[in-house]
Image (cartoon, rainbow, N blue to C red; front, side, top):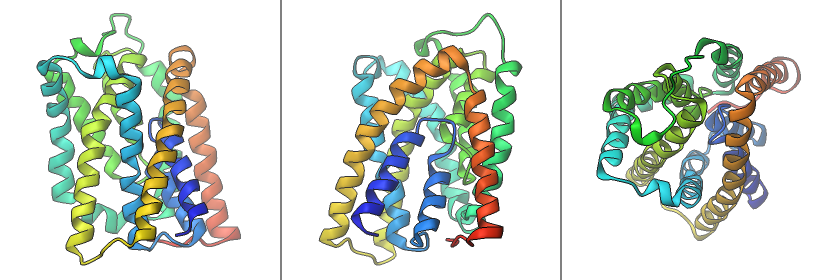
Length: 265
C-alpha cells in the first residue's frame, strides 16, 4: 500500500462509514481495484482507520455522548450481540464471503431494501430521543447490527433499520447507530490488532505513518459526512442511498465479469 492508496481508502471510509452503503464493502472493492486486497496490512488498515470515524462521533456529539450510566448500559446491551457473533463466526464469514462479488450482490439486495424501508416504517408514534430507548430495543438493534458481518451489508444501515423497526424516528435511529458505532468499531479494531500481532506481523514505521494518515483523513471526512447525512435523512429518507447501492453493485459485477476481473481476498 502506498500513501495515495491509503488516502483514497481513508476518504472512502470517512464518507461511507455512517451512510447506509457499507464502508467495508466499498473498501474491499477499492482495494481489489488497487490489487492490494489480499495483503494482511490492507485488512488491518481498513479496520484501524475506523478509529478516526469513531472520534468524529465523539467530537460532533460531545455533549450528548456523555450521558447517564443507564444510556451506556443500553449501548453495552446493543453491543453484546456483535461481540458474541464476531468471536464465534467472524473469521469463518470473512473467509467465505469477503470478496468483491459478495459485496456487489449485498449492495444490490441492500439497495432494494432501502427503496422500501421508508414505506415499511411510518408509525406516527415514534421515539424521538435516544435517551428513551429501552433495553429490549437496544438489544434488538444490536441483533440487526450483526447482519453487517456479511461484507457489503452496511452496519449503519442495518442498525438504523433495526431502530426504525422498533418505532424510532429516522433521525433517532441514525444517532443511536452512530453512538453504537463507538464500542463496536473500537472492539473490532482491538481484535484486529490482536489477531495481526498474534499471527506474527509487526508494523514498520511506514505502515504506522499510513495508519496515522488514514485516521486523520477518515476523521475529517467522517465529520462532514455525518453532518450532511443527518440533514438529508430527516428530509428525504433512504431512497437515494438505495438507488446508489443498486447502481454501484451492478457496476461492480459488470466490471468484474466483462471488463477487469477484480482480485479477491
